Amino acid sequence: MYGKRTSVTQRYGPGRLTSVGLEHREDPRDYHWDGLARGGRSNQPIVIFQYTLTGFGTFERQGVARRVNPGEAFFAIVPSAHRYYLSTDSPEWSFVWLLIPHPYVLQRMTVRLAEAGYVFTLDPQSPMMSAVMRLFEGVCLQRFRDEFAWESAVFDFLLEFERTLADRRYQRSAREQVLTQVADRVRENWSATINIDQLAREWGMSRSHFSHHFKSTTGLSPAHYITDLRLEQVSRRLAESDDKLERIAQETGFADANHLCKVFRRHLHVSPGEYRKQLT
Image (cartoon, rainbow, N blue to C red; front, side, top):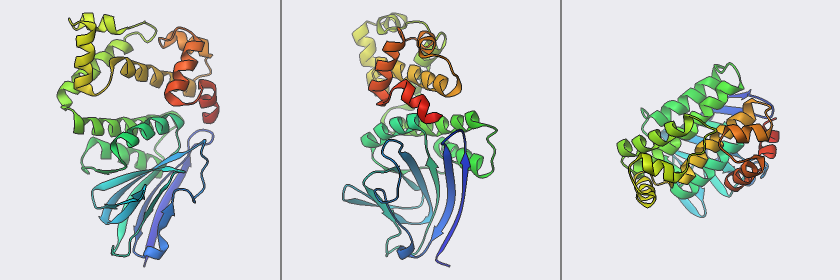
């Protein structure tokens, strides 16, 4: 037997076909993917996550080939210039994979991958891999009761990936404490205007001292983090309700719908209306 594949595809909401699979490959002639030659639309990309169980394969991007060993995973954005394949010197490659279509997750994932690279070592007992398996089993065993349960699992996958990257760069306890405090403060009242001067006073610091402390502890600017929190809430409202932009803007801390549209497009490279249209 040179190849074995078990895969499941489920639809969660209009246009959201999510696939997961478990594969075992032994023939290099039978396993080779080119990220520019496998279909997919540039205006609706997808993210592929693939984690090696046994053997090894090769992931190649920008002319650099990287061996992907057991306990390592790669991310691929389709379409984009990359290849992954079973190399001739590998006796086998067994792996689990996820294919995720979600425009907001793709936007954030693309930024993080550009900063950190595309191949990672992941502890199988880590929270990141737990999020992977929740998503895998949810699709494979049809455990998600609706598209909102599915989207919650997708966001968990994204956030655990971002947390994994952050833990490698910053001391987790101090970072998590600062991020949690600011996030809790914002979530107390989404519609309230919370500025950096106000947060600095609550921390007993000057604006410049607080901004430096936040940046050095978390790797983020406080304004950018607060905006990310608000845009995540906006994205959920766009996906889960038919509320007009003016109401969403007022209830998520933006001055008005025009302000929301400008910030949303600047950060996500798509308008709120286009984002909602992609989901429906």
